[in-house]
Length: 316
Image (cartoon, rainbow, N blue to C red; front, side, top):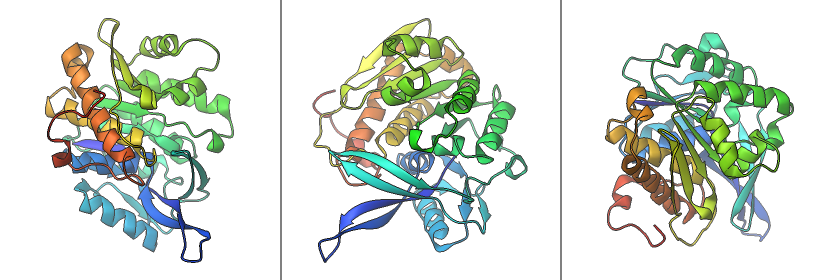
C-alpha cells in the first residue's frame, strides 16, 4: 500500500452563475488528496492519513476517497472545520487563497499519528500540510519515525501565499529532503526552495546530493526530468493536449510515477537506489500521460487506468 499523508480540503472553483455573476463551485481537493484519488483510480492500493472534519464537507471528502478505492482507516476525524481553498484561474493556471485556521487537518498533533501498518511500502508527504502547525510538526515527526523503514516521497508543492516564515519552512524542507528517497519538485518549487540565479539543473544536483535516490523536476509544458543512480539524468516531454486548467496536474503526475514504481516492484529503498534508466523513463512517461488527461478537463479529475490504454499521445 502507498499511504498519502497530508491535506484533504475543498477547492472553491469559479463558475458563472445564472445571473452572469461569478460564483464558486465546491470540489474535493488538496495536493495529497488528489494524489491519493489518482492512485486509487490507477488501481494502486492506497490509503490516506489526514485530518477530516465531521461536517458535511468532511463527509463529502470521505465519500470521495472511498468511491475512488482509497482506504480511510487512518483518517483522523474531529469537530474542527474543513479547509477551504478559493481558486483563481488565469490563462489556464491556478492560484489559491486558503482558509485553514483551526482546521481538522491543520490541528493534527503527534499523538494523533497512528501506527503505520506493515503493508505500507511507501509514504507520500507534501503540500500545505507541511506549512501549517501543529500538523506540519507532527508530519515531520512521522517522517523521522518511518524513514529507513519504507520508501518516503516528498512533494513540497510550495504555496508562498501561506508561508509566513520562509526561513523556518526551508529548514523543514531541508530535513524532509534528507529523509526522503524520492523528491518531486516543480520549477517554481525549486526556485523557492533554492533562491538565486543558479540554473535549475544545478539546484537539482544540490538536492540529489543531500540524500534522495531520485529527484524529479517537472516544468509544465516543458516536460519532466529525473536525477538518479550514479548521477544519471533523463528527460521526457510533456504530452501535447489542449489545456483547460492545471489544477491537480502535478499531483496526478506524482501518482503516475508511484503507480509505475509500485507495479514494477521498485518501491523498495535498495531497488530505488539502483533504478535503471528504462524504468525511470517509463515512470516519468506514465506520470506525464496521466497529468495530460487531468489538465485537459476542468478541476482535479485524474484518469482511470483504462483511460491510459493505447498509443502514447503526440509529444511523447
